[in-house]
Image 1 (cartoon, rainbow, N blue to C red):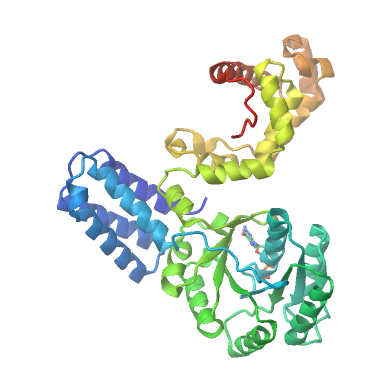
Image 2 (image 1 turned 90 degrees about the vertical axis):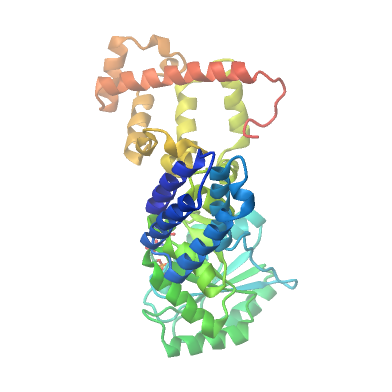
Length: 444
Ligand code: GDP
């Protein structure tokens, strides 16, 4: 999970302040020392750290905090606000052209994830806004980049414009936009050429593409895991190209978070999206406020709800809610439910979005990996239809048969039946508590 170290250190520091009825200047200074170390350890740019600590410190020592009834909590609030501000304050959305197609120019160094992100972004535009994008293969230097984009296009069932690798990117961009106009497509996403390092030839070419394509957004794709290097790359690209935003990839593997916290402040350009995995749906709009809350362990309920809405079939959820109420949930429903939750991403990441959850013991071990999922599935599939609906039938000999059928130890079968039973009991209690009739959406 991103920001792991920073998150833990800040939360420990904050924990000590939170409950205090009175805080002194010395307390604030001590806290700021720890915040400073935490940020530096997370590889945040040192100037950014200096400013951040100064601002938070000054605000925390301010009159209204010291004299408030809950000064500790006020300080936490200030840290949260300043972290949000550091990352740009509000979500920064894409620009939309009044005259379609809107043109997005994707730039970045090789390996940053530019081509993948181009596909992910197109997919997001179609899924969320119902737009028709065109993918443009203008990376004529990296071997196989064109082919990679074409494969992505096939996977996404989306048109790809390419003219091979013997035509100049400027020409490709020009023709692609003409093509999109003729076909009434809404977005043109140009996957430009990357290089291993920032060099002049690359920049000159990108400037030429920019002049012809007149993009509404120029998005730089950088790899979060490269920390301050990503920030330097962003600064370099911004100087020549005037970026409109940044996409930070591989945040899923970045335990420090230095790039995410420094880029906006150093370059003045907002992070618009973050890549959270290799899959094509693993791209999320960047919300500074939610990210700040997550770092401080205050949860991110908004993202959780959005994830649920995007992944859970509402009709099925209703059906299940009813089954919970009348206690008729079967093993098949159970399996389906697990699969839906799994689609939303790693379970431990989801749990961290619930306020307070990260402090609960054992949460870090609560992930269901693909292997466990396959085992559960094998066990349930080895039950007869009757057994799946009525687990009371599952006596010792049936359980042994299921164990043999699924190739899993009988203890595992017992454990699953027990879990299922407990879940049913819990749901019965919960639906008893809710009790409101005619409630429409169980997710709301
Ligand atoms: P390009 O050279 O910049 O076009 O890079 P690619 O799009 O080929 O991506 C390089 C590698 O990074 C590929 O293996 C991608 O699957 C991987 N990648 C891209 N974005 C992400 C991300 O957000 N998370 C993770 N874990 N991997 C990513």
